[in-house]
Image (cartoon, rainbow, N blue to C red; front, side):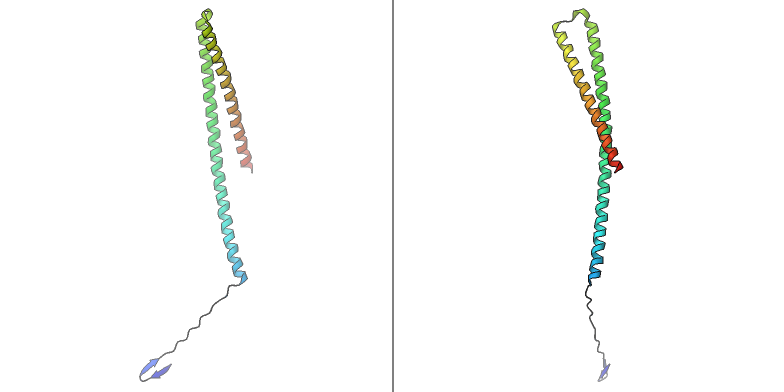
Amino acid sequence: MAKKRGHVVETVTTKTVVKKKTEKSKKKKSARKSHKASHSSNQLIVDNFVALQKVFTNLAIKFDSLSEQISKLLSLFEISAKSFAEKQGADITREDKEFLEKIDRLLEQNKLIAKGLTMMGEKSGLQQQEIRQR
């Protein structure tokens, strides 16, 4: 402290210290960042995997429902064809025969579609089980 005519003058000196970052501190920070990034990407992968499983489950349920509806439609066609054939009996005309043949072809096509959908539903169910096992 220095005195000047009744006043006190203080001299304050400040020292600025600059720390240089060492290689170790840089590596630690980058390791932390990469750990956080890998954790968030892993979480994102898990979330996407869960969403995919939900989609597969919904798809399998919808395939089962569609298969049941097609089976019901098939049985309806069979019943209507039998009923039509019984009512017509001996009075079956050429047009009626053509109509019955068309219905029979529709029945066969519907059976084929139902089998295909059932197989697709089973396949997606198997794929979903394989994914769960991973």
